[in-house]
Each structure stands twice: as C-alpha cells, then as structure tokens.
Image 1 (cartoon, rainbow, N blue to C red):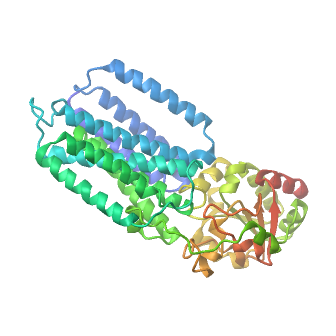
Image 2: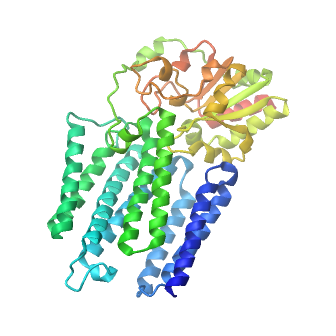
Image 3: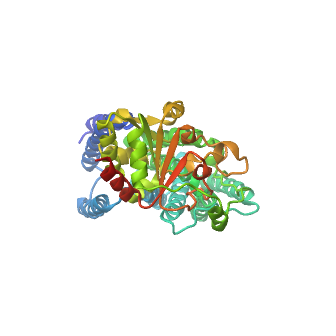
Length: 466
C-alpha cells in the first residue's frame, strides 16, 4: 500500500478515535463511541499489516491469535468488580510493550530507519527511545503495584517512609542525567540504568498512594500509558500511534484532574506520586464502634419507609458492585416508580474503584440515563429528599470529609445524604470503607442500617413492596 493511502487511512482511524472519546464522555453515547473506537482500531490494524515494512505475517498472526484468545476469555469471564484491576493490568502491558520497542530500536536502529549500518543513532532518535523506555518502565511497575492494591495482594494503606520524596526527586534527577548521557554516548550501560531506575521509580510513585485515592491512580496510569504509546510512535515513525498516544495521554491527564477535583487533591502532587500521607486520624476500634449505638432495621421496615416516600435518591457504591445488586436495585426502583415515587440515582465522581465504575454498572442494568445525577446536581436536592437509599457507598457519603480535619478524606466533596429526611444504609457490616475510616453517617439519628448482602436485601425489599 502506498504511503499516501496508508496516511489517509491512518487519518480516518485517528478521527474515529477522537469521535470515540467524544462518545464515551456521556452514558447515552458511550455505546456508539465504543463501536467507533473498534472501527478505528480495525482500520489501523489493517493499514499497518499492508505496510511494506511488514515482512513476517506468520509471527504476527500467531501473536494476534494468542492475544485475541486471551483477551476474549478475560472479557467474557471478568466480573465488573474486577474491572479496575483489569484496566491497571492492561496499562502495565502498554508500558512493557514500550520498553520492548525501545530495546529493539536501541540494538537494531537500522531496522527502524533511525540509525546507520554501524548502529549509530541520531541524538533525536536516542531521546525518543530514552523517553519511551523511561515512561514505559514507570507505567509498567506502577500499574503492577496498582493492580496489587486493587486486588488486595498489596495493602491499600499508604506505604510511606522518611525521605520518600527526596528519594523520588533523586531518582528523577538520575533519570534526566542518564537520558542526557545516553544521547551523547549511546552507552548500553546508560540505557539499562534508565530502564532499572524507571522500574524502581514506578513502584515508589504508586506505593505511597492509599486506597481512597486509587481512582486517581487509574486515571494517572492511563495518562502515562498514553505517553508511553506516543514514545513508541516516534520510535516507529508511526503517525497514528503518536496521535492515539497523545489522545490517551491528554484525556487521561484531564480525567486525572477531574478526579483530583472530585477528591480535593492536588493534581501536581498526584503526578509526582506525593499525595499519599499518613493519616493523623485515630480510627475507632471495632470494640469502640460497637459501644456506639446504631439503629438497625430490616427489609420490611425499609420497604415501608420507601413506600411512604414521595422522593428517593439511590446512592450506589462498590458494595453494590461486589454483590452484583444493580439489577435487583433497578427492579426495586421500578416498583417504587409504579407507586408514584420519584426515584433518582446519585453518582459520586470516584464511586467504586475507577472513574465511571457505577455508571457502567447502572447502564448494564438498563437504568435510564436521565435518572442518574452527578454530585453537584443532586446535592442541592437532598434536603427535599424523603429517603436516601445508600447501597455499599461508604467513603463518598462520610460527613467526616466535611467536619473532621484529621480525617484522611477531609476536604473531599461528598454526597450530602445526611441532609435527607431519612437514610437507609445497606451494608454487610460496620467494617471500615476503602479509605480505612469510620463513617459518621452510621451513627446519625436519621440513619437506619440494613445489614446483609446488598442483593439479598434489595430482593427482600422487593417482596415487601409487591
């Protein structure tokens, strides 16, 4: 295929990716946006396979079959609750691929048309390779650590130590020095030192981050993976990869900024991995918590309160995702609507463990998009709401974020469910949320705790509503 035709097809593919991102910005257009992205990727793969530089179709075919099979199996079997871990794992693969391309380009630059037969590379090409290698390595290990934290194999508590920021700054300085050294000397030692220092830096950037901030981490790593792909694009002289990487990198950075705003974090401190802090908050022990009385109710009592209400706001969280209660929740909401109750859903920007987690689950249950409200839209309505039905959402409803300066979530905008006339809180137990702090909402006079599995609780409420 000629270069003009391939460039045109790459342009079409890039436009499809831009339209896909636009579509994914709203639940009503997300499905169409996803399909548009698939079309763009098919065009990109087809165009790449027809390039003259492609010589061994057998290896490519085997790779596509292996990767496609693994991807299909994972996509069919993955639970929605494990989606954040999956995203983190995919980010790690993007970073690792950037490292592999950088290694191949460094040792065989003539194959990429960035060096002569003697293996000498231009300064610009060396800089591209070094940046791709460094960003890829940081993304790889950072994503692995994020995966471990989300999966529970690594503690979700911030792992910090004295001198952590000094060490991170030192490693950044060493990386910059090594990149300059590589550009001037093309030294294999400098190349591999960049790789290993970046691997360590990736771990050090994510380990200090606590569980409550993991949605920001997912966005941050998404941005890193995009810039790693951009580095690959420059190395391969592939315009589409440069465009796609820049799209992912910039959109990930914007999403990270939105998440930071939603959690009252500093964007720049997130980027340098410095926002994990030890909490000065002294949590109540389980025994102390049990000494404080909470009002406990059952499904029958909850159903009675819901039937008597004229307006209900449902606040879903990660507990709903774990119990897979979204379908039962929608059925309960439909029954209430049939009885004349106004039902809406309130979504916090960081509900769940990744951006948009709750929106995806509600869309899966065919919840009408117009019933789903964002934080700013719904907070002004809680004072006029009869019942707030919280199902598995813990940290994003915790009033301590507003009135306890010692709390690690202090300053984070929350859903003001405590302003509702009555609060029904469906939860398995009095256990702490992902941020590791007690929820003051449990002990409010207008809160009724509904202990048990979220899905079973909704199903019992449905029985009493019928």
